[in-house]
Length: 240
Image (cartoon, rainbow, N blue to C red):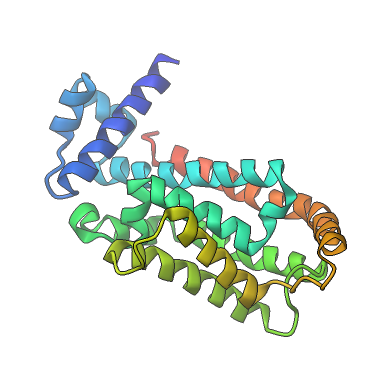
């Protein structure tokens, strides 16, 4: 337990320094000093500075994925693209590490994003596969349009959401409350991907909930597997 807590403290300090100073200025010596451990103790957990800072990035992603799963388990409608991406967007707004990763902020990350793309390539590919499978399941349950190729829907979903991320980083969007911006994202994705509601709102809502409830277990299982693989990757980054 003490070793786990010590590792968490090192990760916290490393994350704080990464955001405050940027990759180039962060040193293992300073991380160790602020975490109140010896430099050798840091190297007991991670082989290199890159491995440690990559673990900081991966932990932010795992935490967001965990919150995503919690939302889906609490409300089946969270499996809809418009709902899921809005949850991830709010996670992005609340986590400066995720913001740096999503916008490829080289001032903060240095070459760490390039390292992540290499080291986490298999994990990222599995995430893309899970998203494609999710869209396919939703199509089968009548919740997502089936008149467009699923690969094109995947592209549209990723591109639209990434556009919102980048706009935040550029500070180029309308100066509106985050709830309003989230609503705009949801409206855009619903219009592009999801099956429109019928003129009878109450029955349509009941049908959508029933369909989402039926689709949710299969979709949740996809992301539980991704969470498991992400945790395995976290462990792989540790020194054997």
